[in-house]
Image 1 (cartoon, rainbow, N blue to C red):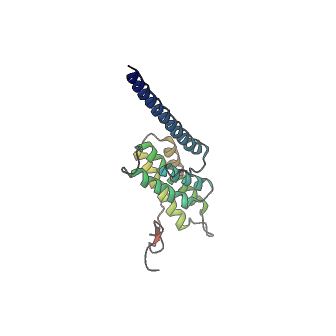
Image 2: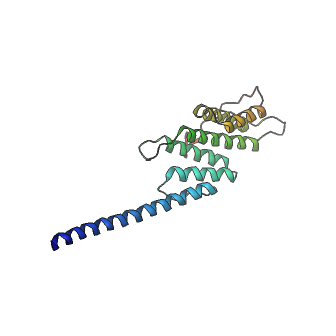
Image 3: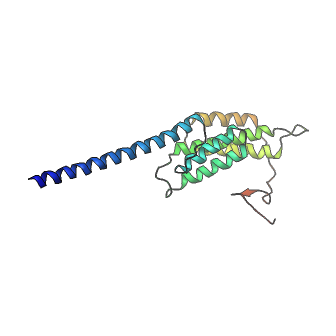
Length: 187
C-alpha cells in the first residue's frame, strides 16, 4: 500500500511539474505576442524574428511614416510575398489584410507622386505619372480583395480627382530598374 501511494504521489508530482512548466511556457508566449501587438499598435518596428511578416509590415509602415515611400512600397511588397507563402507561417492571412497591404502600397505611391508633382513647365513629371498609375492599380487591387474598404474607395476617388483624365506615360526603361535589389541589364 505504501509503494502504491508513493507511486501515485510521484505521478501526481510529475503531472504538477508538467503543468507548471506548461503554464510558464504559455505565459512566456503570451508575453512575446503581447510585446509584438503593443509594438504594432504604437507604430513601432517589430524586432522579433519569430514574426517575419509582422516585422516586415511594421518596418514598411515606419518607412512610409518617415517619408521614405519607395522603401515602404518595397517593404509592403515583400510583406505581401510573405503573406502569400502558405508553408512558412502558421497563420492564415485574410483577404482584408492583403487588401490593407495593397491600400498601403497605394498610399505610399500616391504620396511619392505628390512629392514629384510638376516640372518647371507645369507638367506632371514622368515618375509622378508612373507613381499615380501604380497607386491606382494598388487601390483597385485592394478593392478587388475587399470591396467594402471605404478608405480605399475614398483614396482612389481622391487620386482620380488629382490626376488628369488623359494621363499617358512613357514606358519606363527597365535597364535601370531594380527587382529584389538585383539590377537588370549589363553593369
